[in-house]
Every structure is written in C-alpha cells, then in structure tokens.
Image (cartoon, rainbow, N blue to C red; front, side):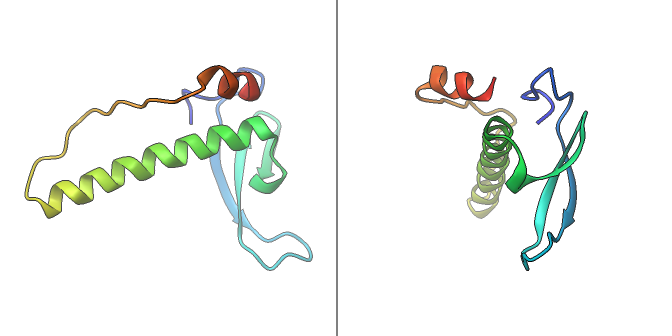
Length: 93
C-alpha cells in the first residue's frame, strides 16, 4: 500500500481491527496522516487502493500455494495488468 498511497494522506498502513457502535462485525482500519479510519468509512479512493493491494497479495499467495502443490519454485516477480486504468487512477486521485 505504501507505493499506492496518495500524497495528501501520507503512507497508508493497516490499522487495528475494531468494532463500531451498533455493528457486531470486526472492521479493519487504515492508518494515515489524519489518523486511523475504519475501512467502511474510508474514501472511495482509499477503498480502491486497499482493494487493489489485497488482490495483489491474494494473487501472490495463490501463486505460492500452486507452486508448492506442483513441487516447483515460485516466481519472484509478477506482472499486473489493469484494464481501464485511466478510470481507476482518476477515481483514486
């Protein structure tokens, strides 16, 4: 998330898991320059950054699992292709 963090918020980092009043779910938070924000209250742009970061980590984890299942060495790099990047960037920044 560090590389994708918008300059006005500083570096985005995972925060603590919290519970919000009248909500029985455990909600992850995101830490940034302005403090710690429950992810459900984050801006649309921050939510997109977190979603993309999650998908990258998930894909990498799946690759390592598949490599192990096939008794092969996992790659040490990955290529990410995003369709409609202009719309994505425009909504993030």
